[in-house]
Image (cartoon, rainbow, N blue to C red; front, side, top):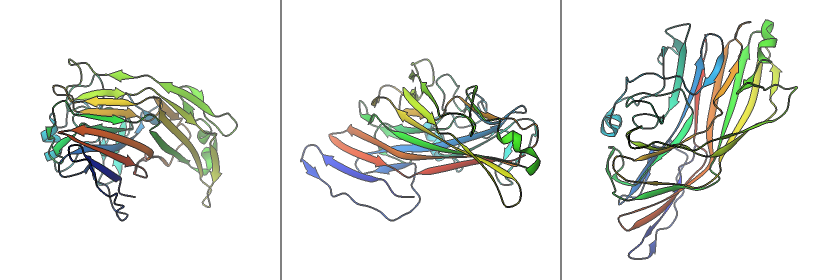
Length: 308
């Protein structure tokens, strides 16, 4: 993946630093200048719920993770939306309900109403207000701002593989109850802005953005071993700019980049379900302590996969 390009303005001196393109390396969940920086992350969840396999953004892990930003960043293994899932073995610990979450999740929680330390099985992107100590979850600059530009776009590739005898299972795809199949049509929908009040998620301000999603007509392909794989693409785009301002304990903004539900029937058997989400483009402009900077993101990707 490609390191984001960052251009910084020192407001008082009026000096622009030269843009730098780094080599292809892993991108940390925070990036910017030594004087001021912002944090960001991309996360993906995949779920089996007994009667369905796919994605359901409302299922919660419960309060089992760090409950403060400092504890989140100090943790040796960053929290995920895993539930009844063994990452080391890549298999479930409870065959009736399991979730595999991957990527860098929003610090402390990723829901407007969830308690601190809880994560729902959503897929999304988050960003922070500016900080002078990017790796610690501290030193967020009072009254600083970070604006995610209108038109931020995220792409999710969905793959569902079934045994040779279970072709009909690959044809059971639905998004929010609408049939998603090769013989159907392109699907579209909208999301509604959610802002967490002071009495809700303690550190999360913007929990969801206004936006639109489009699911292209999918394909089903027979593989060389006789199995079948469903492949479909969902693209999510924000409908307006969102400015995150540091007030009180509110440090983070978030975009949920999927429709509420994507599901398939597992009744005839299944082999794997996989979601790969990527940032097509996201531009964040931020200011604080007399400094302004723009962070342009593209190409970062995260994959979550489950199997029985």
